[in-house]
Amino acid sequence: MRIKLLLSIAAVLFTASFSNLHAQTDGKKREVGVQFSGFNFDGFTAFNALYRKQKSENVYRRIRATFGNISLLTAGEGIVSFNAGLAIGREKRRTLDRKLEFYRGPEFSASLGFLAGEVLNELATINLGFGYVLGLQHSFSDLWAIHLETVPGVNVGFIIMDEDGVLSLGAGFSSAVTLGVVRKF
Image (cartoon, rainbow, N blue to C red; front, side):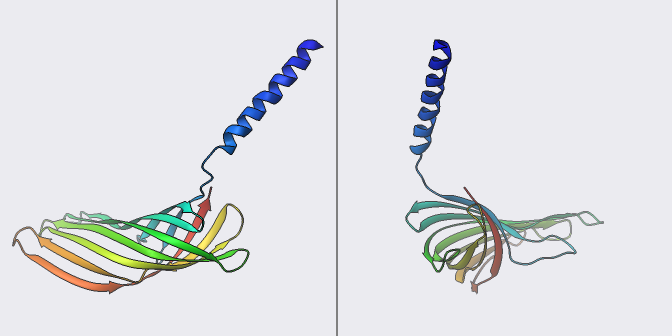
């Protein structure tokens, strides 16, 4: 009987120590998700992977990886194409109702592209941009949410051609609407 009592007390103390360790975590919220700006049922659809971490009350750091195109065409002419980028920003959130939040904030981005083939000159692109994120996020539960966002902004692109040594500079405005799903933890 005495051994059972000691084991019970030890189990309670052991469980209590784990609950104290859990209470000492940073308490910061994190979100991970995927975004789509369009759907192409005949081929590859570009998408973004999104990670957010809460820095303070209603302020999040966001990191977005963009994947535009990775392809290899070998029908007589070998053509290789690649396009990817990374965007880092900060967003502030404002609660509109129980489940709906509005978020906004600046975002800096960079992307690289490459195109090469047997009959094509090698072509590399570098794009740098600055945008301002505007979005709405609806939480279905404590774990899942869906959002709609746009990032109007300005970008500068460089095109570098291998054979001719041509460097071209272009600038433009960008804005796309994306639909995303987010898992909170």
